[in-house]
Each structure stands twice: as C-alpha cells, then as structure tokens.
Length: 259
Image (cartoon, rainbow, N blue to C red):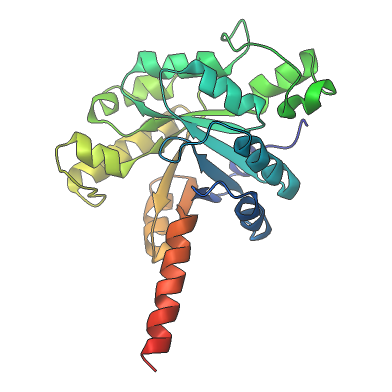
C-alpha cells in the first residue's frame, strides 16, 4: 500500500495539482474523478457526515485510479486524523485552525513518535491489513502523507508565517467563505479586498517556507485559476462534484428549453 502520493509528486515537479471535492461518498464518483485525469480529490468529512465503512470504500476507489485522497476532518479530535490515515488517506486537512498551537497539534496527531503521537497498528487498509506494516511503512507514512490545515479565520492569518514554518506541515487550504464570515461579512465574499489580501498573505508565507496553498475556484475556470497561480498557489480545487453536476444539468435544460 506504499503508493505514490500523486499530489506530492506533482508539486515536487513544479506543476499545478488540480483536484475537486466529493460530498456524496460515492466510490464511483472518486473513480470518475481519477479517470478524468485529475490529481487529487478532497473527501469532505466536515459538512458531509460519515463515520462508517464508506470512508474505506472511498479510499479503495482512490487507490484503484491512482489519485491522492485528501480527507477533511474537524479539529480537536486527533482520533479522526488517525482514522482517516488508517483508512488510506494520503493527505488530511483539518478545519477552522485559529492558532499556531492548533496547527502544531494537527501535525503531532498525524505523525508517529517521536515527531508526534499517532497510534500504531498495521491492521488497517493503509497497511494492507498487516501485510505492509512495520518500520518501513511507519517511515513512509511520516514522509509521504501530506498534512494540511484550513486557513479560514482572521485570527490565524495574523500568525500565518509562524504556522507555515511548522516542520511536518505540508500545505494549507484557504477557505474564503469562512474567512468572509470571520470578518463579519455574513456571506462568502471571495473578491472582497480584505479576503484577497489574506489569500495573498497566506500564499507569500507559504512560499517563504516552501509550503503549498490550495484554494477552490469556480467557473469560468481559466480566469480565476490564472489569478491564483500567478499568486503562487499550486493546488487548485475545481468545485464540488454536486455543484458541477447541478451546473451541467441546469445548462443542458436551459439550452434545450430555449430551442
């Protein structure tokens, strides 16, 4: 199960990693994402609530098509991080981080001793149910699995440089919607000057410490993608699968009804 982490590989080669988010918990959708040629897929376990065998089935689908599965979990529960990694996630991202200390706690929960306090068991999907466990797998896990945090709060942006300097933290996912809410804007306002300034500040801090930034974009893809790539962001998320599907169906229906 010591598979190549495609997201890490693409970034190491200096390319832009393109992925999407899946909320439906359908392994078939994960396979479709992989067959479409995308590099990674974020499985949301913050707003889409799943704590059963469906997560392992999603990880199996990602392994089948060779894409990196990134799992988002809520903070303050290190066991969720461990369970996501045991299930086969090659990247985790933890939501609503508001301080350097919270970001450090995420890294420690994702790493084995002495770097952290992740509990060990080779009897999991990630280690081939015991066939691939042991020291080599532990070292591979600490080296290859990507650890990330959400930057989505005004409070943490004030110390984002310190957060990006954390050893063992690989990337952050900037959340414009919740960042807008933290500013008191009461809705997602991605293009608001204060939100854009925070995105730029995060990208600059990441660049100084050789870390990556992820951000979601909407249609039309080209313009927004270019803006963030020019800003130094190298992980681009193209919508959520249900939103992409809804948009495609809506356009098809409007086109046919207009005939």
